[in-house]
Structure formats: structure tokens, C-alpha cells
Image 1: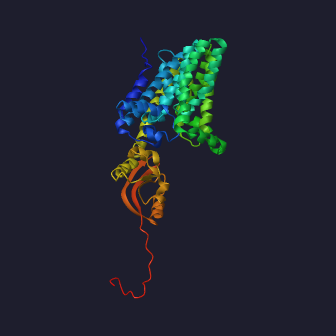
Image 2 (image 1 turned 90 degrees about the horizontal axis):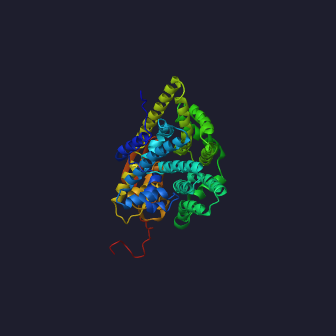
Length: 466
């Protein structure tokens, strides 16, 4: 009797269809997404350029920007799963178990949340997985063409998110390995052409943004770190990753590491070492970040997905009991990922709706009025033009003010403005999120006319009519 198996392409196809099926019902645009979608706003921020350039390219073809960003994110997530399956095949997964490489990432609910938004996370995961696939191809072939693609795709990942710079050491190691073994100048020149993608990052910062941006902010934080937070992050990120593997996750990874190290061929030890480097380097880099965000665990989930898949195959090929336990654990992981992702999306579905409606009210006012806000990115995106920081309210005689309860104490700001300003409320909007209710107000403020000091009457004057 022929045993049924799941084709490797089915999980990526299911993911893409699921994400695109909900795109009209999920239109939350957070501050990061707003900067990616508004190209004019982007160059005044520290965002890396590849994802917004892709959105802009589709927009130039007539596709609405938000839909373009969501399509790129959903397609990138699906392609990530497909690339992981191909990596798994190169590491020893067979035709019937190649899709196991997709299980760990697909069990992460955050993977579904950010695959539905115009955000860089899934695009970076796709490029990171593709870089590792190119790395495996180069280890097995040693060809200059494979080295070119390794360097080029690694540069694209670094142009998408700063975490992509963890690929620079393995890229340099592969170049050194190629030169030491091949000693072909023509092949080296071809491979070196891959560094063109790395130049995109430096061109963006030196010629367009012209500011220290993300890296300056990051390194200034490293100079004065809050080490207690760093230690907490070191513990929290792996915990967030392993929580998505459920009960059998650690056993899968442990078995898979042993299988990888001993049975992955002549290049197994090298790929085994560099996979551990990628996990540890990503972990340390994220832990030193200035805030904790579980979405950053996506890259860690990516790096443990392959050893976990090898461990799943080992368990599946064991006793009947081990096979049933493995199949049940994988089914629970995938079900938990889909349901958890749907729950997260439902929780944040209305986030930002208050700012969107407030911006719509402001857009109906005279375009000559200056708009001030305490949340710049989302307000600028929904308004369709850049707003100015709220702290400039004291120097303008008349302006529109959009304030959010997440950024400001509305009661305190109202009392402060009422000392010298007349406030006309144009709207008061509310939305609900995981952290409770949020409120955004739209005020038309104008400076009160100064009261003229009383002048004593002159001699001989008897009244106004004289």
C-alpha cells in the first residue's frame, strides 16, 4: 500500500492563500509600515531601502501601495517556507519529509501576523533562507556562480533589515575558501560582482539619508547599554522561540543536531558550525537591542527550523509510537500557529483606526493649516502629507493638532494649551487593542488675542462720545 505524503509546496501555497484571503479585512498600518509605504517620508527615517523600493516599484505599475506591501509580505512568507524545504532536502530530508522544514516557522503565530502587514519581516526571512540555501550550494559545489549568488542575496538581506549583517562573516569566509582552493582570478571577479547589492545599503545612507540613522542609534545604545535588560532579552528570545515548538520541540532540535553533524556529508560540519554562528549572532544582536519585541524571534525560529526538521524525520523513522507522536506534535504545532496567528490579527485589527479617522477629519480642513501630531509616521501616511511635531504648537498662531493617548496625556495637554489657546474639538476617536482602549483627538487651536491694558482717561474727556 502506497503511503500518503504531503508535497513540500503545499504549506507555502496554503500560507499564501490564507494571507491573501484576509487582506481586505486587515488594513492596520503601524508606524514602521507607514514609513515603508510613504517613500517621501522614508528618506527622512533610518529605514533600510529594499522593501520600500519594491513597494514603490509596484506602485509605479499602478498597484495601490498598501496592497502591494501586503502582497510582497505574503508572497515572501510563502517563498520562505519553500526555500526551507529545499534547504531540508540538501541536508538529508527525503521527498516525503521535506515539508517538515516548514513546520517550526509555520508554528509561530507572529509569522502569520507580519505576513499580513506591509512589513519587512517576511521579506527578510525569505532572503535569509535564500542566503543559507546559496551557502549550502556553494559548500557542495565550490563554483564561482554559487558564490556570486551567495554574496548578492546576502547583500539584499542586509538591505532589508539590519540583522542581515550577520551574513558578512560567512560571506568573507566563503570568498577566502574560494580563493584558497580555486585561485581563479576570472571566477573571483565574477563572484565579487555580488557585492553590488551591499553597495545599495551604503549608497542609501551616504547619498540619500545622510544621517547616522539606525546604526548610529544602535551603536549609541551599545555605548550605554542597560545590561539588566540585555540579560533579560538573552533569556526571553530563546524562550519565545522554543514556546512555538510545544512539548516535543527540544527533542526534535536535539535529535536533528546530531543527525546534521554526522550525516550531512562532507560539508555537514561546516554548515553545522555556521548555522550555530547565525543563531548565536542573531540572538546576541537582538538581545542588545533597545527594546524587546517577540517579532524579532522570527529569525531565530528560522535558524532552528532545519535541525528541528531533521529531528522530526529521525523520530518519524523510529518506532510506530514515535512516528505517531511526531505526527501529532507537528499537527498541533501547525494548528497552534494558524489559530494563534488569527487571534493576534483579531487583537490588532482595529489598531490605528482612531488615527486614520482623525487624519480624515484633518484632511477636510483648509490645506493651508499646519498639522501637528505626537505620532508622525501613521498620521502623515493617512493624511497624505507630512505633519510637523506637536512640540511646535507654541510658535504657531493657528494649527490643527492630532494627539493620541498612547503618546500623550490628553487631559494634561488640553489644560496646558487652554492657558494661551482657544481649542475647538473637531473629533474624538477610539479603538481597541491588546493593551486596552486608545483615544485620538483632533483640535483646532488658535492663539487668544491679547487683552489690551486699560488706559486712564485724559483731562477733559467726559465719555466715549465726546
